[in-house]
Picture 1 (cartoon, rainbow, N blue to C red):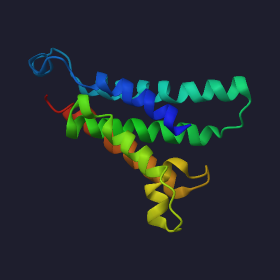
Picture 2 (picture 1 turned 30 degrees about the vertical axis):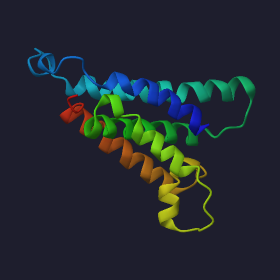
Picture 3 (picture 1 turned 135 degrees about the horizontal axis):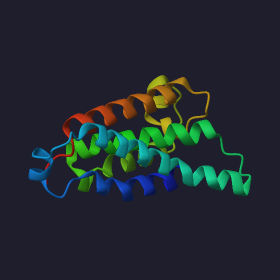
Picture 4 (picture 1 turned 135 degrees about the vertical axis):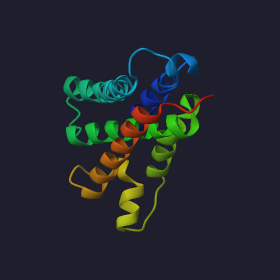
Length: 149
């Protein structure tokens, strides 16, 4: 499920970079609310696909996990756009997905944070990690925008 979601987030994260930096600096309206809304809409779209599959196929996916993963991955895409630019913003959510799907035998709090995408719905560490990524991503992307190319 997280692989499908990260593919949608990765494809859409290319739209997080503006085509003209001068236009963003001289715009007559403020960009931060629009940037934040862009990430919120992206999170809704990332969660919509798996939620529709869950309803139509009766696959018993946990809604909390779908929403948590979508919000966290989009937050990572926002962090990626700020730090690496929109063209490479996909690397952060993709890296988190790869890391979460590496089979590791240890059981610790640090491991639960690293593998937050594959943790069960009742995992407080996974929910906290996703919410921190979402908050940092939305605030950072809304405040500073994408890194110039």
